[in-house]
Image (cartoon, rainbow, N blue to C red; front, side):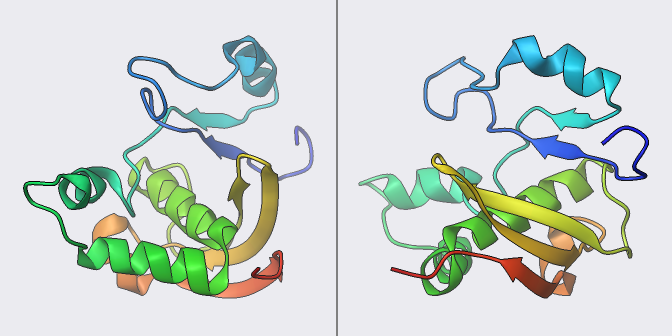
Length: 144
């Protein structure tokens, strides 16, 4: 991306996402990304799950939440990649790494790879989630 005018922001899983204390990102690639001027966000809390998932999955508390409903709507009715792209945009906005009030290209997907690209106008932060606008879906897989 260096020299293109494009600023790359990579949002990784948070430490411990799959295994306690483990960061899944390939740390050997950090120098390359740094040389290219990219920002790496080491796993901000997942906006559309985080603490809510811990509460809804707890058998003593149980039940779904409004946050779960938003996440499931994006994930199941449109595409998992759209949910990931939106969530990463919010995490990056919370970290001050994407410009507020300017469109960004957000990419998301699954463990199998990035498959969804959209143009998003991020809000100031997660607390303003309903100000976020998905302005265009450039590519996404068909729902199965």
